[in-house]
Amino acid sequence: MTNFGNMTLREFSKSLASTNPTPGGGSAAAIALSQSAALTVMVAEITIGKDKWKDGWTASEIAKNVATPLIHDGLELADKDTDAFIGVMDSFKLPKGNDGEIANRKLAISDATHQASLVPLETAQVALELLLTHKELAEFGNANAVTDVAVASLLASAACKGALFNVEINATSLPDELSTDLLSNVKNIRDQSREASRDVMKAVYDRMGTN
Image 1 (tube, rainbow, N blue to C red):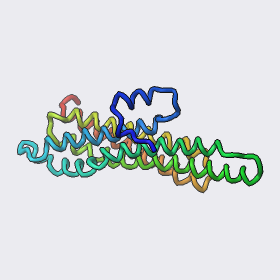
Image 2: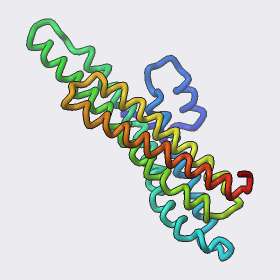
Image 3: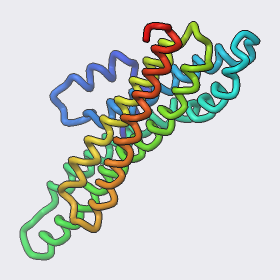
Image 4: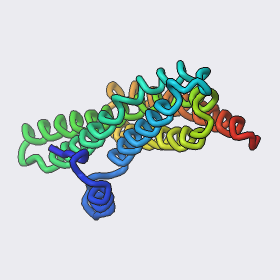
């Protein structure tokens, strides 16, 4: 089983840069989610309890509650994404010497590809949940860290939209009864993330006074 959480940043980057098929974009998106969550928690922590930023305590608590588990969960999703892709590759290696083996191989490929769609879909869903906390954090959190909210938002957006590409590419090879809901979710999440990203950036620029 994959465990990117035990790697140093240098080791993960080296692994990502290699010609090996894994890790790839899906795992990188999940790592971005974890980094976004960590940065979100930092901003929340330097807001909560500070009288000067009292108006941002509630937004910070909400953001912190969403982000805290995602620091760990993002790493786990990176592992799951790589393991799911390995499952797809393994399914294509199954024997196809007779009709029974061909049928079993086809089913295994479909099941593995479906699983390889569900993992990045989860990454996208939780990344969107995190992204939706950033607007109010930018508006009311510690103003000294508003650009950190911007970076956290950009990372969450990249995690969300990046993961959706993996859902989409896998879903398009699945039969309609498996792909229809997946592709509908892709569209809905992508639309929501696009709007949320714009809202956060506007809030950041407004707080910086550069609009």
